[in-house]
Amino acid sequence: MTRDLQPLARQVINGYELTRAEARMILDYPDDDILPLLHSAYTIRKHYYGNKVKLNLIINTKSGACPENCGYCAQSRDSTHPIQKYRMMDKDTIVQGAEKAHQLNSGTYCIVASGRGPTERELANVTSAVKEIKEKYPLKICACLGILKPSQAERLKEAGVDRYNHNINTSENHHDQITTSHTYQDRVSTVHKAKEAGISPCSGVIVGMRETKQDVIDMAVALKALDADSIPVNFLHAMEGTLLEGTDELHPLYCLKVLCLFRFINPTKEIRISGGREVNLRSLQPLGLYPANSIFIGDYLTTAGQEGTKDHQMLKDLGFEIDYEKSEFPV
Image 1 (tube, rainbow, N blue to C red):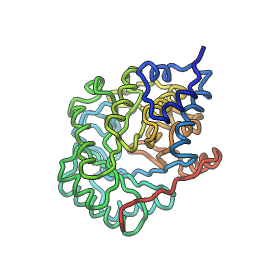
Image 2: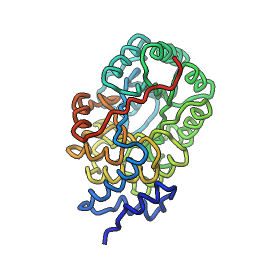
Image 3: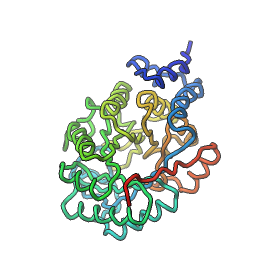
C-alpha cells in the first residue's frame, strides 16, 4: 500500500527532517499516485509561499571559451557543440537586459558569465552595471560569475548584488564523473564566501547526469546543510559534442518526484524549475509548480526557453500569482 504523505508534509512544516528512507520513498513513489504526492508537496509549498511564483530572467553576458571541463556544458573547453561565443558584454547591454526583465515582471535579474572566475575587468564591468540597474529598476540582482575570492564577493555586495549563484550541480560522490578541473569543495567554498559577504546564497543541481537516486538525495541534503536560500533544479538537456551527449535518463513523472523531494527536504526555500524544464517536463510543466515556487522565463545560457508570454499564461491558467518581491537594497 502506498503511504499517505499528507501527515509527513504536516510534520515537515512543524520542523521534521526526512530520513533517507523517506526521501527514497518519494523518488520511488508509484507513477499512478503522482497527484497525491504533488498534493502533499503543495501543502508544504502553500504554507510558505501561498500561490505565488517568483520569476527570474537570465542574461548570458559572456559565452564560451571556458577553461573548465564540465561534462554537461556546451561552453566547456572540451565541448565541440557549436555555440555563439563572445567576450563580456559592455555595461550598457547588461543594463538593457534589466529593462527586459522588468517588462516581463521578473523579480530577479541573473547576470551570468562563463569562466572559472571573473577577471578584474569583468568584475568592474558587472559592478558598474549593477549600480546603474539599481538606480533604474526595483529588481533583485543575482550574479553567477564562477569561483569567487572573498574580496570579489565583498565588491559585488557593495555594488548591490542581492544574490550569488554557484551550483553544486551534483553530489560530492558523483562530482569527479562530471568535472575534474575544479573540486566539489571549490563550489561549496564559493557559496560560503558569498554568505560571508552578506549576499544571499543560491545553489542548485542538474539532475539526469547518470547519477543514482542516492546522489539526488545527497544533493538535496547538501543544499539544506548549505542553507541555500534559492535552489535551482535543472534537468539535463544533453547537447551534442559534450561529455554527456546522448544521455536521456529522465521522464516527466520522475522530474516531478525530484521537485517534490527538494520541497520536502528544503521546505522553506525557493525551489526554482530551471534549465531543461521544457524538454524534460514537457506537457507536465504546469504540475511542477505545485512543489516549486519559482521559474526562469526566457532563454537559458546556450538553449532556448519557452516564450515569456506562454509562461505568464501558464501561471494565469493555474490560478497562481506572480510574486512581485523586489530588491531590498536601498536605491
